[in-house]
Image (cartoon, rainbow, N blue to C red; front, side):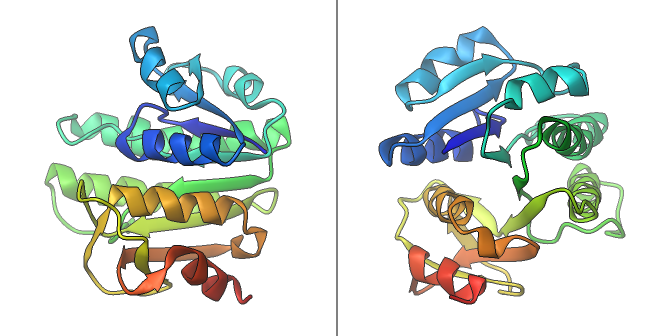
Length: 218
């Protein structure tokens, strides 16, 4: 498979790129600056310099040409402004979906967040972030032309992955290593029966492959 990852230099994205490349997939990562390219090459991915904020839908669609799946793993980051929560976390996901439709790429996975909700109250930056992620999820889920899956991890950690997770429509709050988020994404990409699902993810006791098969109904 050819898989294009938006936010290709992110912590989850780099982990995912290594996993996909190791199993023989062709992987490309969209990055904002050429200075990030060597990290992607080290992960086994092709770097594509394209700023999702400023690029046109047509430019993004060109970058997606020939892809079998697209993953939105971009984010403005914890130190970013309120405005960039909307321009990256919300609008970037929508633009990538527009581009996927234009390029004829049906499989679309979006890394969201536990608690994402357009009606989330509050004026803090994290409150705005959760509303932006909720709006992005809603925009993607409304597209019949996409075989979408929304993944909502709990609190992310840099602990070593365990390969044991809890995955489902509702999991309750909890932590999840970024390693395990990447592993779940890799399985979801290859499991088309998970299209149309919004899934929460935390650490648990079920092996990743089994957890994904369970939610897919296999």
